[in-house]
Amino acid sequence: MSCGQHQWRSAGRSQQGRARARNEDAFLDCPQRGCWAVADGMGGYRHGEVASQWVVSSLAAMSAEGDLDRRVGALRQRLQDVNQRLGDVRMAPATGGDVMMGSTVVALLLEHGRAACIWAGDSRCYLWRDKSLYQLSRDHSLAQRLMDERLLSVAQAQAHPDARALTRAVGARSRLQLEVLELSTRPGDVFLLCSDGLYQALSHGDLGCALSLGAPRQAVDHLFARASCRPTADDLTAVVVQS
Image (tube, rainbow, N blue to C red; front, side, top):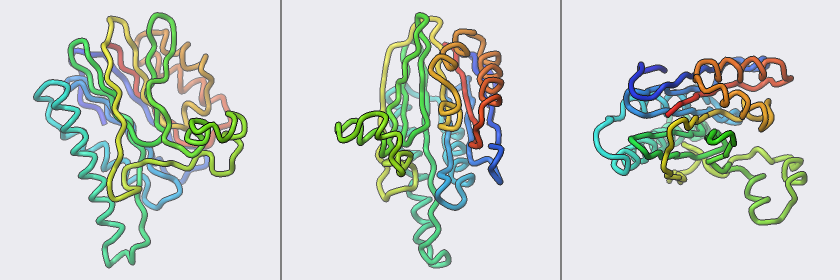
């Protein structure tokens, strides 16, 4: 979903995975409101593409009024509302309580000199600054939890059969837990929002090389060109924002 251009330059793209019946990713590219997002419908649940579209559509309708703190609060509330809506579908008598719908979300809000990254799940936000790549978000996954708690090494956690199981997501529980990171921006900063299909297909160096190109459309095209050469079957989604 694209909303035009304003103060920031941005570009986004989503592509159905080779082995997927449908694309369960969705993205928001809304520079005139300083708002971008990527949502990845949970593949283990039904109707993942519906859940991710609900997330993106809700954020697309959010007002651009107010300072960053107010906008973060509004975004939180919208995602809580979507979470409740997904829960209502799950508990509806017509579904028999067995319809699970869920989605990851990673969103970026920008205003003059400030940024906020908000997320739940394993879709990521990266920052390219001063020729270095930083991962701003931290995965809400079983693998990450096992590493954080020092129960397993990185290699052991990644080899765990449930490594990619999510510990947070929109629609997964009655109350959505979001994580927020705020930071100051600098001229030339480049942000990347992406689904796990993209970053798992590419190396840290691949991501940095693409973002170093600066121009968002060129960066997105480079990411997809590289990912298409890799043996990945997952949906691919990326949004690149230059501040």
